[in-house]
Image (cartoon, rainbow, N blue to C red; front, top):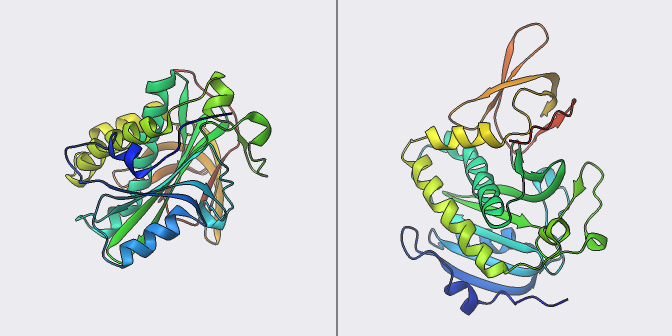
Length: 268
């Protein structure tokens, strides 16, 4: 199986040329692109610093879960230096996941959906994920997409099934082009979010959501409860209606999990 390597030169040709000043750092094998980006951020790397690797040996998702990152996937991290209040920063995970979902749908036509707060699915199989970590006044957004990974090489995590673009479409994809498309989709949504214009972000989340209107089990730190997802607020928190009628606001923080209790996927 052959696919083009991700190099600084191939990436430079696809990076958006307006808005954020992107600067690519390409690696063969790293422990985690987020760890590399966090180190660069702590050293003063500007917004737009992009770290991409062919393989991650210690990739991770939220709550410390392992993220298998073999050759053929798209493993990248972005350094951001947002100027808005820290309370709004968790919403960046939704903005990022939406950009990934829109890109994958645009290039493939697949029925891509969002599983709050940060997973991208085809049906109920996970194809991509986002993890946001703080580095002082900076944020690092880690994005992992299963691109050219054969079915037999996909990870088999305990809590979800995985898929890839190759598995879903039967063809190889240009990963450099996907980087450019994801960053382009991210830029405009990030600019809107930073400016406080949340209309598109909320509308897209409602359209793509796997959990809106569904019964879910939520664990948030020491708290756990079940209820129906009835909405989302401007900071990316879901609103869950409990059986007694009370409502709980659940922010997209690093220690929260949200699992579907009933599967009623809608193919819009």
